Image (tube, one colour):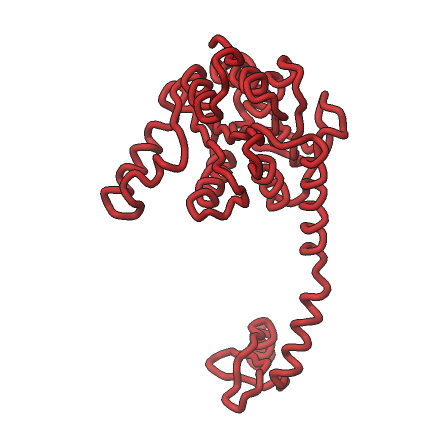
Length: 287
């Protein structure tokens, strides 16, 4: 059975509908097929702009993000700023890094007497929560429904009270919350960002906070200490990459090192924080 070539070409032109700017300062809605173009409609720039404005006005996500960010700020105001922990959601509770994370979060909560903030997920985020609870200090979180490595989604934390965390629909709101929880506006504010070993999500958050500190856009009047926990040389290859960046001129020499403190163990991290905040020896924990 022979095909109708004219009908096929017409169908192709319909499928290949596209907008083009017409030389006459009009926007042409045209169709192309077999090297030919059919004029379907002509829209003036004003009409096209009105159509685009209507389309944008129907998008609700900007308002929803704004409301969710505001909810994050309200939770921080209620629980207080403090120590923010980033880390893998996949690490099991019998892993050495998990046990180290529990101990560090416990000791930092006691040393700084602050709220512990995480993404309220499993893995090393859960380790930080457990450590803070051992210290009997407040815990807050910005959860997402499904972390990497999880098989199902849930808006609820398995054991934290619902008033201590917020389940975020938008990553941008979650990131705003984690950053704002670290802001220092008064000398008495003692906060810290701690990066445990982690994968793509952890590195995404680490690099974003690094960039905010580098560009002085973190929104803090006072410096915020940032600790990179290099357990078992986990981040050593990343540090080598930064060294290569310096050699190639992509970053200034010593620039990355000035933005954070690389710690190979918990004792080193606690000593650095105690010195950073000039905590008296009588109040320092034996670690």
